[in-house]
View 1 (cartoon, rainbow, N blue to C red):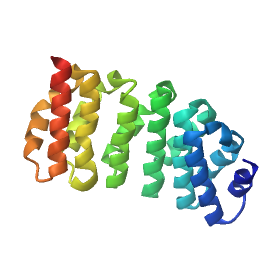
View 2: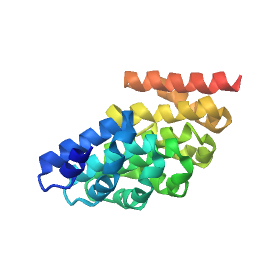
View 3: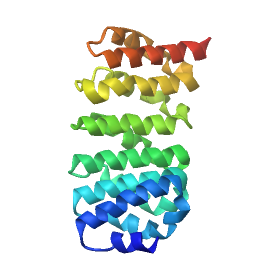
Length: 217
């Protein structure tokens, strides 16, 4: 993949974005093919252009899902990017941490509180990314989220129905399927959400309730 390395290192934004997209796709399906491009990929996390930086986060997350040890050097930068002034960069950095955490939870354990703190971000897409990241990590370590239930229950009332409120029940479904005793305290609020104005919210709330009750029985 010498060509991808060259493209990642050139000065043309469009070419860099195209190369990042290729790394993300190939890195997810056949990671060995992009191994030589990892150092150049990680360098792009520091790119001053938000579009390039956010795409680099996405690609790191895709590679990290398959080969988390390859992106160990990117962890400190991803953590810093969760405070980036650009919302898309914050969103993708959090998403990447979640993907890496799904593959190797111990790599993100010490950053879990930081990820959860972004549930109060002003951007709905960032809040959504927090839910996705937690879902990924919780598939492996649901017990880590026992004290985070108030955060997830609060997101059930998020003002953004299109993204956040629709997805909020899903983290409770993931937890309820694996550790129902952790998610049981959300049952009253999930029951309330069965009357939500948004149809998808109602469906997802029912799915979460079903998961909790089935696993508890």
